[in-house]
Image (cartoon, rainbow, N blue to C red; front, top):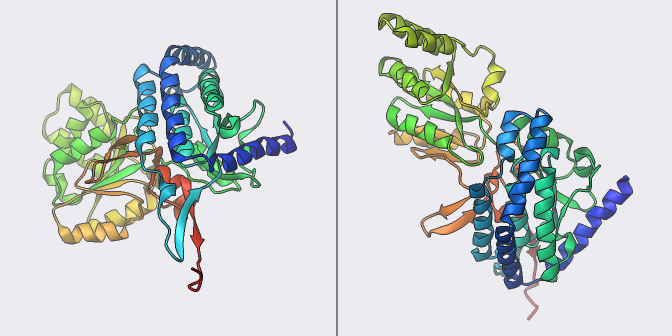
Length: 432
């Protein structure tokens, strides 16, 4: 496809967005419910297409991480179906009232969702866009081609049957590269990259349009002197149970130096028994080695000692997401050092503080450059669930970071409000 043809392809989505904005909220919600039902009825054919993708990807030596992300289980597909149903029940952000000299929330237009693995997330992203009047262009990885085509065909039939423009939800034609897509400034309004950090960073750097990267992994937990070891362990393990991906997995733990004499080594051994591969700074590994020697460790402990002696000396590793069962531990002298370290190396989308000190909490919250801060709370991310005291449902694709280019537009949880923008309505006081 030539650049001119690609522009024409995006233009069809642009004109579809103009038409979609004129369709009532009730009709868009009804379409989402019908889409959910159609996906449910054709579940087996989607899963069969996914099996073909998995078999082909194994033959192509696709990394195990991507294979796990690509796997579309009945539970994962049911989760996407439930998200579509919940979306239809959410209030429409576009119906907010506008006063004199007020702001009106409006759709963005054409949104591109580019992603690795996770075929069901393309479906959720499409539902979120259609809910607020955006059209969406999907570009998944080659590893999920059959699954994506199966879902796209079902969605196409639903759109046509409901009288919606076919271009409301489209997949990028074969042969179009990612780089060609994310420079389509004329009609494309936003690109949302999702996948491994290297992939997300590449898209964010090359895009000439607004990018809203979804951050994954490399979240920090600071265990202050007044924190709780058992609760820290619970938060770390729980943060890694997200399905299909642990968006807010705690991968780095900063501990106050006082914990070296208050059970830290036994705590580390407890984490290792849970299957985590624990690494640490030079101070952590030296203390753990001394602890094992003094406790006359058995052969099992000696094997644990060897694993932990892999001290992290290169500082840039602290800024990388592991996306596996590795946990790194850093010892600091005080809260100021912890704040400085987190601001330098955290992914900046979700960090945790454990403390009983109000002054320490206030200092940490005001100075940490992260879009979401959890204080004495679990950080596990859910794509839908109860949100807030009023019990409202919140559907979200993921979380963005204060350290990324999309931050100035809408940092934090990427929900349906993040897929809209505002226009100001100015009314002269003398008009009736």
